[in-house]
Length: 95
Image: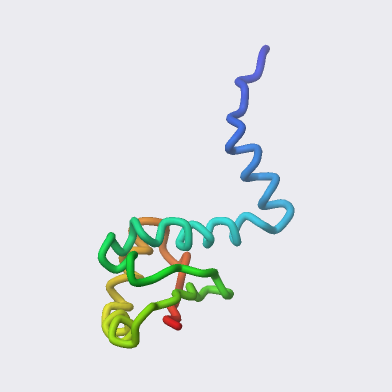
């Protein structure tokens, strides 16, 4: 009996998991989708740089924005949880 063909995305994902890159790439989605997650206004003032462990590091152009985003951190983390997945990012550091 013939087997159903496997989707290439699933094969690649499994391969990356075996190499230990799966979780890292999954978390990197937060960096790539930052403008979509926070919207155009915040995206023009910020740049998601990298993931350090479970922390998203975001560069902020102005101190006033950095302070405002600190107050919005919980809301942004909740949006990341809903858009990408719970626990993908546990903290955000604004620099």
